[in-house]
Image (cartoon, rainbow, N blue to C red; front, side, top):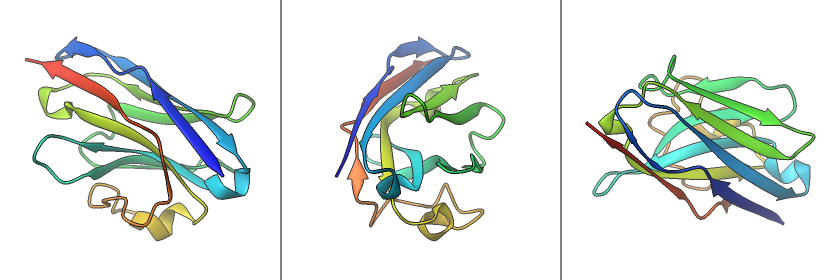
Length: 133
């Protein structure tokens, strides 16, 4: 019911910026909450940021707050993740995700980072972000 296609991943030096995009299709009720997750080699998948598609309320992992910004262009059905001041520890495969459930059910109001995405039904293929020292 929902298809997600990410783009924008690249290799960049520390301190640089990237903008990830996620083109979405499918019924809007199946993507009430959308967000970004990431997974580094040998590490557990973690939540980065989420957004309500209806009123733009956002949630961020503490490690990225102030550096990353999640946004959505509903007219274009596109989700974005603007990443500034990138650090080597940001290196990971980044995934776009969608869920018909409220964002607060997925991770709670302050638990974005600990969210693994288990139970989230819709995922993109991922886009690689590599940050060199």
